Amino acid sequence: MRPVTDQQEQAILAVHVRGLDGMCVGCRAWWSRLTPYPCPQLDWATSRQARRITNRFLEGAG
Image 1 (cartoon, rainbow, N blue to C red):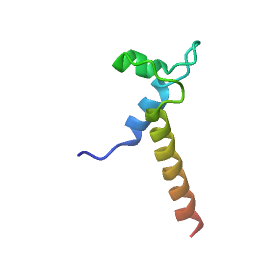
Image 2: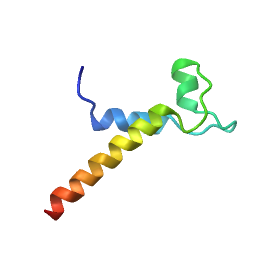
Image 3: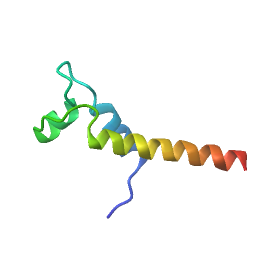
């Protein structure tokens, strides 16, 4: 399994947005799935981004 890059997280965050119908646009476009927003992929990418930001802050504070 390859490590996930910041660019991959950014791509997920950019594509998985709320549609006018309340469904995730990225899930519909990539997998033809009607998934309520926020979808699991967005939750994952947001969590990874928050973890990275927190680690940068803690490294700078130490």
